[in-house]
Length: 238
Length: 222
Image (tube, rainbow over all chains, first blue to last red; front, side, top):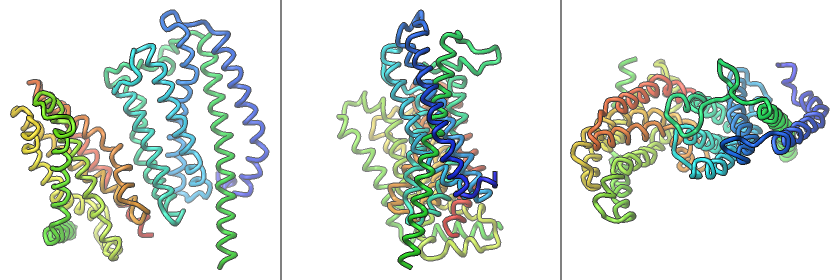
């Protein structure tokens, strides 16, 4: 891990990998959209609206995955002072907030025809909304200090504190009686979903993951360059 | 260690008593916020009674947020925080002492005022006990989680608006179970489960928050 701690080396590797990641993301999303919108059957109960799932579920997974990554990067930053960890956390938070917003919006669009309401205050929806607020709090806190280093440390601590929400989201459908359905994929008796729907779902999830990695790389590169410019400016004036 | 703990509690209480306006301002804010609701939604007794638990609890949350910035800010500005960091007693214990002092000057007045505000909102008398018990079990979590937020935002621009943004999402369980206890009592149901969950929230905060707040204070002073 420390081999990649050098920002210049990271930038070189990221530069080389970025086109491949971006192309993979576009390919997976295109294939996922084809299988999801054309080649998969409508649901016997939900009809065509089931296709919202191919965006909603991967967004929700990514919302949680990005927060887990944010917490892991924050722990890495606090424990090892890894110089890229705080850049990664700062770069990941707005993307995670975007995925969370997308999961909430597509969920509302799906809830309106299926449940007859845009929003219910059940445990799953509320805990995801809180995840969204945690992202916003993290973004606000990291940007609130004149000294970027202070913002990075405070944000890292907040990300770790907020990680208590992740298991609450995951198990909210088991602990409480919610309108939201319980897990269909991660079950001991195998996924309760037909392969014609599972294929596009997993393709979209992979596409979203690669998209996240591509945007993360671009944002990290931008933040590293901004940091270098700031250092040069300070050196120039001093 | 006990002596240092008691010394910090005593100092913060004396400070709060001698410049009493701060603690009083939070309490007045609490009363004003709750009093706005009947004016905003209309004085119809049935509607007020239904929302009384939620309104009183939300007012309590907001009033607790208002008083959080004085938890560490003054010490941060006058250098007292550095002395706390250098003290031989563990910082976690001193943070706990400051949380206790904050609860005594902010949580306790809120707790004592809440039945009166419930009365203003036409809350059923059988729900008062659940409200007070819920406040007694839940408000320590507000002080403890709030200490983490207050410590994280030390020295930030616009810390006053930042702290509620950080703390309120984390104290949602306190609100949910606090209101659940009031509503269960008003409906004649068993209030033990939500009260136990409130106690669990406070105990979890008691176990975790001093460490997080102490870590945040160390990085703020570093």
